[in-house]
Image (cartoon, rainbow, N blue to C red; front, side):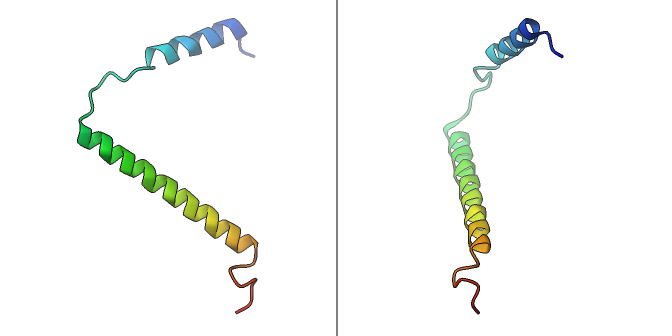
Length: 64
């Protein structure tokens, strides 16, 4: 399907080109991105917890 050497060479070239960011970030932007990352991880963990409790029959084993 893909020419192996050519395809992977292109991917490596693209990865090398964008390996380092070209813009400077202020400390406030870095803090905001860190907080957003923590928030996203917390939401995913909460979603996983909710999914697990629904599968296991809820906190009380499905009893009201």
